Length: 429
Ligand SMILES: *Cc1c(COP(=O)(O)O)cnc(C)c1O
Image (cartoon, rainbow, N blue to C red; front, side, top):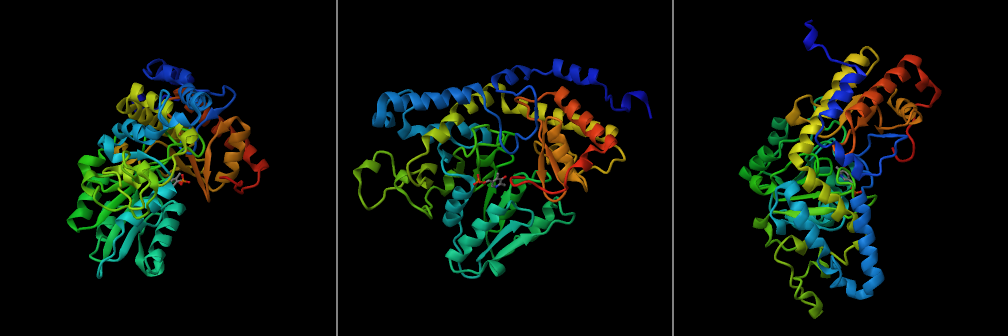
């Protein structure tokens, strides 16, 4: 092998990468614990100073204005969800009024499936993927039951050939005449595979099927063009890559062509803003994505998002994506050279346009390797039965952190320190 094609695994190289990193100053915006290496931003992003500030601002409005905080103060609560929708729209390529910050992934999926799932004649089935996040499946099962259909028969799955990823042709093949609705992830939560949203949307629409995506693992990771792609709807959470805090209020998108759809679930905050306080029993829904809101917005759980989104606007999604690919690419290089022959396999797709923001390793002893990593000051993310997700996040992680994590992993394997732990998962992971 020629010298220059071999991976440079030196610490010096990691430092050089950090020196070349134009986004390194954003790390200062976060409360980074210097004792730990946090590689779990794909599950819960860490607190930024901006998010802290906008949370305190919301408390200040409450302190100063009491109920008048709904219409007064720097960020009146009555328009909070709409304003956050406008700020979120650029991240997913939506028009400002196609997005609203409300609910949670689970609740928003209930709302939009109840809105978009309109079985007719023999077109009664819902198509999902066999590797979907459990809550998405629970939602589909209960929505089918509510409309009087048996999920055993009416919820159909695309199968994975390798247990980790999908062939897009296998998905399209499943888009048969009896499918009324398709719900898929933009990025698979385990393997990190990106599904080609544009192509899948086109294929669905050619067959007269509505399609929605769960963006939990892609929002804030790479640019989307949901409006131009014609995607009917999408849902996501704001506590993963967007760093809006534990249980932060989520978001939803509905394409403007679909605004005439009556919300499956109605609540007074879905009203046209100027009509809401008329207090009439006949509802006048908003004429945009705001119509899919339910009740009073959770201001204190959406306030951190205001500050968190500022950082995305300043850093720019293209630059963040480039750094993320460089970080994960570098990590894979180190895994292949430093962890060779130790039983690890890289189970995420390798092509840049097919992989999301994390690296997915598989190992027979994954549970206890993660425990050993934690003892070494690294926060990984275990996914049963044998997955280790490692997410170096471009806003606050560095190349030297990637180097340290793989170095510690190498020592854990060489010294077999993982054997001190039980190969069982904890309560949360
Ligand atoms: C994180 C995640 C969820 C979580 O849903 P919540 O309603 O916020 O608990 C749902 N779906 C996917 C794909 C996720 O990654």
